[in-house]
Length: 398
Image 1 (tube, rainbow, N blue to C red):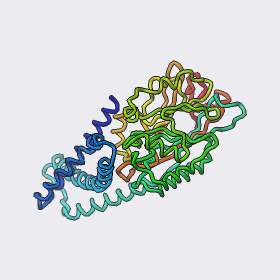
Image 2 (image 1 turned 90 degrees about the horizontal axis):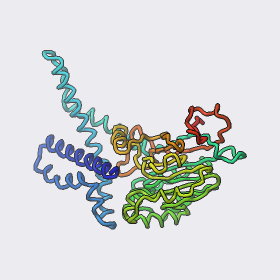
Image 3 (image 1 turned 180 degrees about the vertical axis):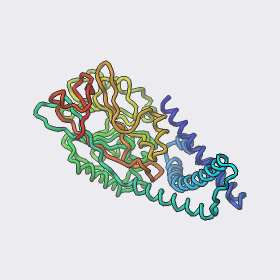
Image 4 (image 1 turned 90 degrees about the vertical axis):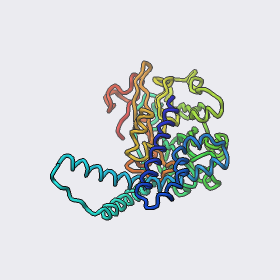
């Protein structure tokens, strides 16, 4: 239901935005017949999510994906311009109703249009810049589940790299370099590593293969890794020396790391939920991390898993799209805490490092996440009272 709900919301966004863009172009154009000829294109782009998913894996799906990718940038810029102009018209109309008999200044339409286009161009340019401005988010968690002689265990988490021609090799190189600069003990990748499973070059694989950590590099699959064929995505990641938990459970030092597939991957496999089998016989004295692409705390993991790491939503990627993600998943980006009978489970949702289709971010920058696990010595050292829920775990400011 959650997946269907998100698909319907995405489809509604695509249809409304492309419909509004077509209507706006038709309204302002002096040659409406020519604009009307573009209607099939706007219909195709309006129903892009459904058409893309209905196509079988292969070249047709890849071509449509590339077309949709190219189209989103100018479409987004056009939406910015037309929404701004219509917003100004609506504001002037409302002021006129509130102040009858008092004429409002009427600047020349041509000047207003030029000013709006320049403003939107600057905002779009900033969005292009922010999408490539990777930040490091740091978090410290105190836990009683570390060995007494261990001062710190560093996890570096990255998700939604969306490796492909749009993000490019330079972005991947920057992401890999930033991860390695944190000197991680273990590296965790949260899915959508490929923009779709037909992406990924030999150069991309060689760059990804630079990821190394003493306790290993582990990944799960996201929905974009399944577009085309999830098996190809697994082969690409394994070829770069990355352990793919699809699904899987491994021990890495004092950690137990669980990984589950995205629902789209499970449908390709014809499987149901994999997590109950992974939780069977779990040693609760070890710190347990769950890698799950979707940013929803699974009920069966609540109170059993210490920390779940997820991505997928990009935080909306643009600040005013954030409510769409909150409506779809009910989970904000950053650290979320869930109390249960078995104890407290934490869920960290990252905004991701890359982008899908739309190459801009506005007030929702890309990130990698550095999580330092440190010993919990005394209750007085906890910065969040009762956050451990009896499990000996509490978030602290680094």
